[in-house]
Picture 1 (tube, one colour):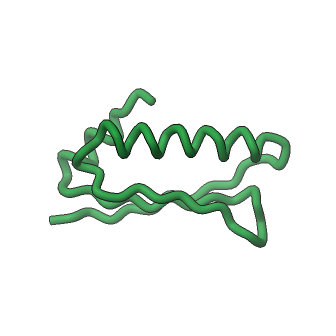
Picture 2 (cartoon, rainbow, N blue to C red; picture 1 turned 90 degrees about the vertical axis):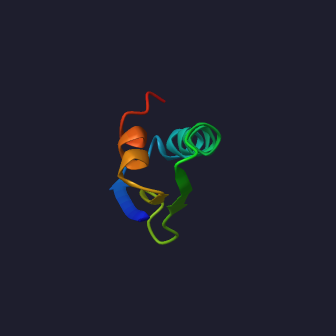
Length: 72
């Protein structure tokens, strides 16, 4: 059974661009190295650019656990 998970957070204003670049790198890493992660999307809030939301869809609990142990 698929597992849907979200994660949201806020960063300080000064590193927003650095955080956006890190998110892009991490999402690409997950897409290329975690086949059990069926979807991984990240959004930056338009009204508050210091806030981010991530959506994950894992194929099962094992895939979710593998993602949680990612070293990237």
